[in-house]
Length: 346
Image (tube, rainbow, N blue to C red):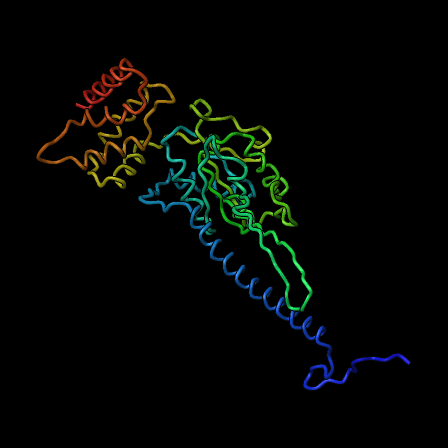
C-alpha cells in the first residue's frame, strides 16, 4: 500500500490538503503569471504610445497652397495609375520643378497614412527599416521558498520601426524624397520589397526578421537628375522595379498660379517674376537653372518690401540667383543676365 500525504478532495475549488512547499509554489506561480499579464498590458500600451510618436515623427508635412491645374492633375493621375497597377513611382526632374509637392499631395489623395524620409549620403539601411533603441538587463530573484534561492537574468531589447518598416507593416504610403542622394547600398533592402513583397530586417534577431508587405503599401520616390552634385545613380536592378516619370518645369500659366498662391501677389507682378526666371533658365547650365521655388522666393521678397523704402526688383533676383554662384566672375555674369532679362520686359 502506497501512502499518499494528500487526497483529491476540494472545498470551493481548492485542495483541502497541501504541503507548505506546494502552497508556496502555487503562490509563486500565480504571482509570476499575474506579473506577466501586467507587464504584457503595460508593454502593449507603451508600444501603442511609441507607435504614435514614431508615426508622428515621419508624417509628411502638410501641403499648403497646392495649385490644381489640368497640367498638374494629369501628372497626379499618371502617378495614381501606376500605383493602382502595383508599381512604385520614381519622379525624376530638375530641382525646384515641384516633384516633392506633387508627390506629397498625390500620396495624401491615395487615402492611406503617409510616412516620409528625406535621403542623403548619411542614410543607412537602419534609418530605413529601424533598429534596437535600447538594451536592458533585468535580474530576477525568487525568495518565495525558505532556504531556496533561484536567480535568472533577463535581457530585454526594444526594436523601433523606421519609415520603410512602418509603411510595409501597416500599409502606409512611403514618400522617399531625394531618393538618389542616398548611397545605393542602403537602398538594397527595397529590392525584395518591390519584387517579392517581403521586407527583411537583417539586424533583427527574432521570428519577426521578415515582414510581409501589406497589400496597401505604396511608394513614391523623387530624385534630381544624375548631373546634380551629390546624386548617386541607383542600381539598375532597383530602377527596373519602378516606373520612372520625368518631370520638367511647369508651363508659364501654372508657374504664375503657383507664385500667386504662395505670395498673394497680383497677377501682373507674378507674371513679371516668372518671365524673368524662365528667361534666366535659358541662359545658365542645367544644374544652375532657377526653378519655380526661385520665383516664389522673389515674389515673397517683393511682397515683404516696405512701401516707404522700396528695394530694386533687380536686387531681389540677384540675391536669389547668387545662391548658386561659384566665383565673383560667375556672380557678375548672373547679375548681367538679370539686368538683361528685366530690360527685355520694358
